[in-house]
Image (cartoon, rainbow, N blue to C red; front, top):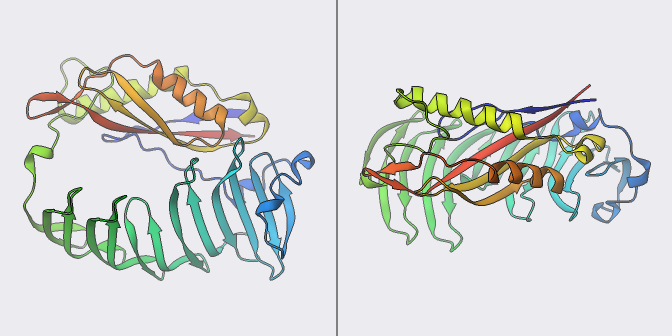
Length: 305
């Protein structure tokens, strides 16, 4: 079996097409009899095991639906719970996702493959889906329970008044969206904007988008050359997206590496190792001065064959 590490640079954050381990990729896995009882404690009384592997559990419920669960195997922390219809293809029922530390990322319900009712997303907050599209008020709160932002949606797009608040709950920006485009806004904190994002090995003689694209390309090359697909992950058919976050200090050093979604400990350790080995970056610039900045690096691991 061939292994592949896929990276794609875009904008200030590296975005990688997400290959979430689900029922479709699950079918391609080799059945693992030695793990048949590994996750039985997570099953409901009406479920029977279809397949159980090092990091996943696929079961059938008495009503004919199927349930897919994925785990961070070393701690047995569940990271994905998805219900499917009897055809094993269409999401139907409760869906939840967690980071490796148990932090809830997403929660909501599917009806025949479309999101419905109240959903929670860690990045956008809580709101309603109608026929698979975001609709009405979506509110995001911080860890203290204070509102961070409120946006209105229509047919899946931001449409209507919006408000953004600081960590103390003070309004810092408000305005109006129309069809996902800002129509008007006020109270903008211009000082909060970076004039330059952090760059990995900046390219001489380039500026703006060209400099950013060149630096991203160098970063991708560096990661691709140094990152290895852990053997235990290959042996147990573990693939998907590892999400790393770290700070680029004002002097360009990489600090405070955190892997939110590591898939397994070996993958988590490998991505951390490569990030730790990085040379100094060119720091972010704000108001003409270098500043500390958070950077997100998702890396997609994919098995072929």
